[in-house]
Image 1 (cartoon, rainbow, N blue to C red):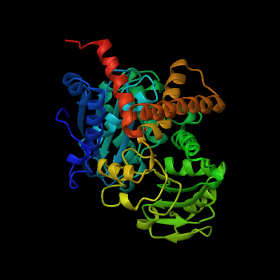
Image 2: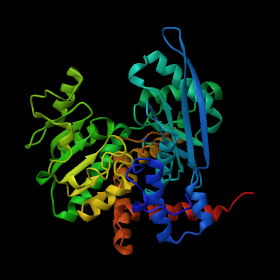
Image 3: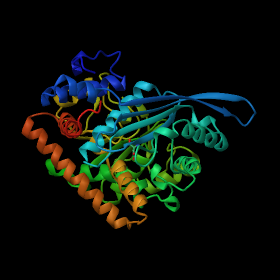
Image 4: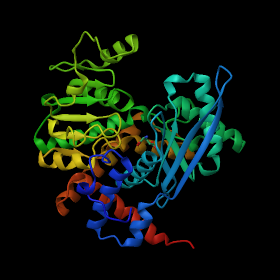
Length: 427
Ligand code: GLU
């Protein structure tokens, strides 16, 4: 990552490579901070990349081998921290980018972690529960020397959940010969999970959106919101935001979109999806073309699913005032340029979705102390951190005349570089 990339030096063909997207933002922030070449090399290279091949005996007796990754981008500020995703299209470049984003995210909200990410190439929809459990346990066993409460603390991400975290925790604990709850976060409550963790990413999105509204003199009641993704992040953000008066006018999912200009009843939509398996055909709204839905005129757009949904081919069609990035990497660097021209107020992913890892930090603290907080305390501390971090990013952006994304990267890079300088290089 030392050769300097700028958003404009990224071509349309490779704008969707997340590692290049991460590198473009990194380079811009590093140049503005005038980081020296050596520091750029250190921060621009992942500290460790583990590739494992995971044999699993399937229910029908066949043996399949899956490929898994765990990348620790940085441990300069503390143990690596970040989720594990299960998806058919996972790549090492993607995991690398996501790991680096975790480093910057933890630094933006100033929690004592580095960044890591894991991924296993598989389609969890095609695997039974028993097969998923075997895959998870064997993957854990393969990376066991590299994880731990002091080393690297995984968490849920795309297609992984509390149940998967419980299997990781149990596998690790069986090897350690004692129960180690702090090895993962996002666990079930009865196994050392934190109150408020399931809602945390969505709640964080709500907190920063409320802060951004103030800049526009808007109130939740006057605010139309479109959410792309109705999983843990989008679903929770929608539920919490509609409860305080936001009008969620559209939910966009992979299998369709549902629209109601007066605001959707999110709890009812969740019940409908549970009963029918899809958000489409909901009586409290009308179905609409999922490819058009993201471009509805609205005040807040929350992409809360996967990477690269806003790119050079569609960014000019985005019609929101505030873009709150609930997903990691939903906007490509080329799209950033278009959004800047359109004066969209971007709350960048490494700030907007940091509520999840912030409450993961609280979970890790609680596990290590064996002392658990009530939900009010979790939410109050989350609000403090998200609010302070939002203010820090926006003030930094104004002071240095950069956009919010580059401000967040600059703040983060500066903090991580400081830790590396103070520690020195061990040789
Ligand atoms: N996967 C989430 C993220 O991308 C949460 C990570 C964590 O809690 O460690 O931020």
